[in-house]
Amino acid sequence: MSTRYKGSLISSTAAATSTSTAPGIWRSNEVMQAIQGSIWPPYGASMEYLVVAGGAGGGEGGGGAGGYRSSTLLVLATLTITVTVGAGGAANVPGNNSVFSTVTSTGGGYGGTIYASAPNTSTNANGGNGGSGGGS
Image (cartoon, rainbow, N blue to C red; front, side, top):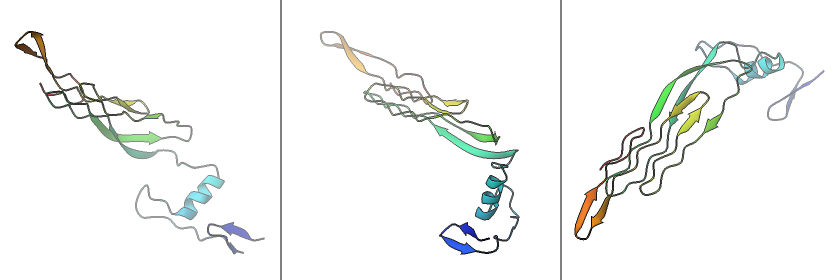
């Protein structure tokens, strides 16, 4: 019986099984065999993540950068990950949060503005809070 492999090559023997010396590194034939054996992804494997939120829009002061979080997450076969990418803000609007699984990064704070409170006078408004606060 022949087996079909990637690239439409047909062989009468399966690819040799090998193990990698680096933890967390799998060869394509090992992944294929693990999927067929219903053991993919491997239990107890971890993945690194970086979650960056949207930066804010500036006013007269600059908008703040979006916050970030990074770490590792344990991968289970039944793990479902929700991902939301936070957009950047327009002028004087904060950035939107980004979400990866249960991890949330806060969007940047909007830039401060100067507005007229009466003829020939102005008032400064501070920048908003956020992953990185906006300038005033």
